[in-house]
Image (cartoon, rainbow, N blue to C red; front, side, top):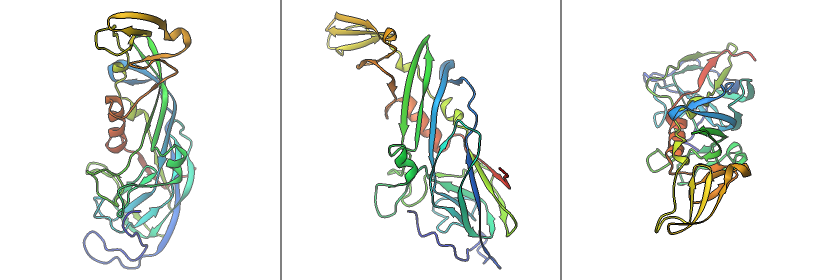
Length: 288
């Protein structure tokens, strides 16, 4: 887990001790957003979303304006995790944020894979484990040049060589507005995600190719929906993947669906969007 997060008297951002802090806890809700159909991605590609599951948690609320290494001790924390169906707007109570009264000015969270100070590999929470050790799973279909391309992509979001060990990966940015004076009156917090905004930057056009057999080329090429098996420039056989209710994937030929792999532009776009793209909304005093 991150640095020791005790619920003791905290020091305010001004360096003066808060007086009369009281230990409290209050409900935490999560929700997605009803996804419009279709979502329009790069190049006016229409994308229909069948699944968009997010592993969310843990969540920390900090006294300082900037979360991260400066938030050694969180004012409030929820150490659990949950799989959020981000295609649904209905909220779900997932637990309680526990801490001490006072001001919170920033937030940070992980997506089911919690950063560790003592090891390079993250701790895998239940939500990520339920998603096959991933933070986000997206499934659907994209219409590219008249071809319907079913796809799946699975993205883990975890610490890397470029991130701080022991600190959650996703944090409030300097332009994000967040402020709350938490006292002993009734409190609640709703965190809502809009995954459609993460998808709009993905480019599916590169997955539809118009290749032909060439010397020293691959033995299997895709010309739109048509799979060619090659021997140098000679086409040994061809078949229409769409007639099999499949999609032609470069170098693989007819497949039930496209698996978007790490290294592709579409994958990188989605990963970057999860880390630094559209932020969730935070709604205080939420009533279910």
